Structure formats: structure tokens, C-alpha cells
Image (cartoon, rainbow, N blue to C red):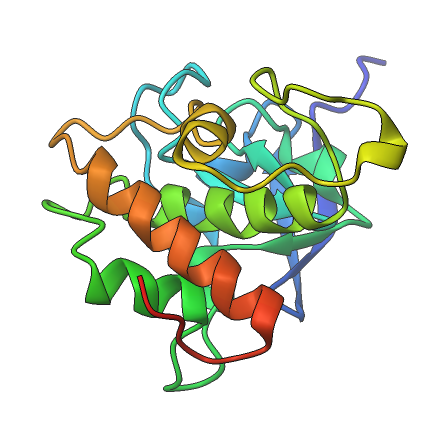
Length: 185
């Protein structure tokens, strides 16, 4: 008897459980878009190189085009649809809106999900490739434009809105650090 090539899985997405049958080769991106009609996550290169499909898995960034849906079972998946609090935008979303951190908007969902993780990673003291002092006792480096650019480098914007994206991430990080809804850019 040939082994099964499909399974019924349960995914927790944006706090809700979804049970669906999937072929074992189905990516998380395709499960989100094609099976669950959560189309905010975009399919860009379908090779893990552009970041348009970035979601959060247990709070960490993941390119969903390379993540198998069956491997996401038992993990918390956050897509762009789960970032806002009802009609109230998350501070990262608001910063992107306020500072024009988008143009065509295609990469924006992945950029926002990545920015959420960048801010958390930075606050936790994780160094990047441009961090000058990586010793834990040094603490987090300032979240400079260079730090933001390096940390967001896995997300491409074909329109070239990078200057505004960097400003939006900086504003949202400042807002989180100070506990305010908006920080002055």
C-alpha cells in the first residue's frame, strides 16, 4: 500500500483554528491563499527571495512560500489579517500609512509582518550583521537606519519605498519603546 500523500491538518491562524485537507506538498502560502481565502499574504517570487509572503510563525518571521502547511500545524501563524485590533491599526501599520511606507502595496503585508519581528528581535537584543558590539552585556544597539535596513533586507520593494519603510519601522519601534501610540518621526 502506498503511503498517503495528503493529511487533514489544523492550523491556528490569527488566533482561529482551521481544519483542512492538504496535499503534503502544499506550502503554507498556498494553504492561506487558496484553501482559506486569506489573500493578504502575497505570492511574489515563490522562491523565498522577495519576502512578500512573510508571516509570523510563533512570533518569528517566515517566508510562507517555503514553509510546508503540514509543518505549521501546532504553531501560531500570524498573517497581515491578524495584525490590527479590529478596526484599529497596529502602530506598525499606522506608521506605514502615515509615512507612505508603501506605493503599490504589494509587498506591504510582508514588510509589516517582518517589521513586527524586527522590532521584537531588536528589543530582545538580537544583533544584526551591522551591529558593532554583539556582546550580550552591550545591550541592543540603537535602532539606526542601517540596523533597520539590514534587518529588513529580506523584504524587497519593487517600487523603491525603502526610505519611507525605514522611517515607518523607526517610528513604530520608538512608539513601542516609549509605550505611546505614535512617536514623532
